[in-house]
Structure formats: structure tokens, C-alpha cells
Amino acid sequence: MGGVYLDFEYPVVEMFHSLQGEGFWTGTNAFFIRLAGCDVYCPWCDQKETWSTRGHPLLTVLEIIKEAKNTTANVVIVTGGEPLLYNLLPLTKSLKGEGYRIHLETSGSRDLTGVFDWITLSPKPYKKPLEAIYKYADELKVVVDKESDLIWAESEAKKVRKSCWKYLQPQWNNKASQELVINYILTHPHWRLSLQTHKFLKIQ
Image 1 (cartoon, rainbow, N blue to C red):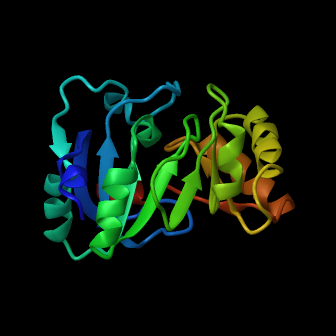
Image 2: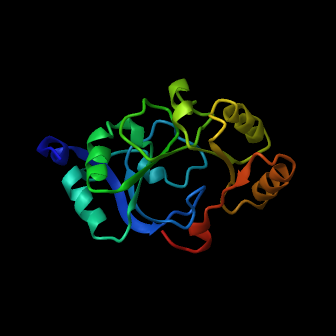
Image 3: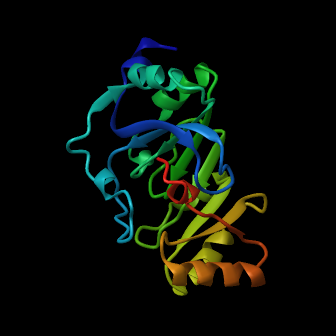
């Protein structure tokens, strides 16, 4: 790894070691890097503290890697906010050099940068993804609040590769949303259910 990469800085909301709670990799031992800054502003967002970079420290790639090495995880998940607000090549290339598997969680609102083993695209109607990102998505995860979100989900599903896993995720702690998603999947079997299991388990 080059020293320039190791000195590259990112605004970090938090880093933590836990289980992936959502989607295809649910239950996986992982190290999470949550970057600050977002340009989508979902009204139901449960991480609104990530929208601004103010109050969040700038950490170097070297500092981030040291934190990851203090855990038993071999999967690193880069999330936000919207992590693609930043050039992720220095971070991801350095982590790959240390042998980590790198996953990205993104709304797709910005150009893709970095090297990844898995990309979860979670598109939002408030700021639609760039067309170029759909072909890279390994997993499509659409959060459903109301019935019109299902129409949005189907339109997004047509844009990804056939091999892309498709998930619908109900709003947390919203019984109507949960019932809507479950009933829809029962009649549309190309979708799978994603739950925020970390919230049920009361873990980070």
C-alpha cells in the first residue's frame, strides 16, 4: 500500500463490529464504516445524524484499517450517509490489500469509485440513481413505506442484471408496511424479504 492512500481522510460517523442485519448477507460477521454526508435526505431515514459532516472526525485510511484489525471480521461494509460522495478507491484498495472482502451500501446517487466484492444498491425516489450503477449491483434493496413504493421497486428491478438479488424491506416498526411487503412477495416471488434484524436483536 502506498503512503498516499494511507494518509487519505474520510469523515467517519462511527465504526463498529457487529452482524450484518439486512439483505443477502444477514448474520455475517462484519466491520462497519459509516461515513458522514448524504445528498438524498429520505424523510424516514433512521441515520439522519449522517447527513452532515459537521461534528464527525476526519480519519485516515491507516486509522480505519487499525480499527478493523482489532476485530475478527473479514468483511468490511462501507455505508453512510451516502459513501459515494467520496473517492473510495484509497480506502477500498488499501483494505483489499489487507485481505478484506469489501461491501458497499449505496443509493447510487453518485459515480461509483473503489473496488468492491459486493454492491447493495438501495435506490431512493427522492434522488434517483445514476444509470451507470445498475449493472454493478449484486443486490437491489428497496425500502417500502407505502403501496406506491412497490411500483417504484418494480421499475428499479427492470434495470439491474438478472443475477441481482432483489429485496423488499418494510419500514422498521411499521406493521402496515410489513404486511404490505409480505403479501406482495407472496404474489411476486422474484422478491425476497429483508428485515432489519439488528433492531429486533437490539444490536448495533
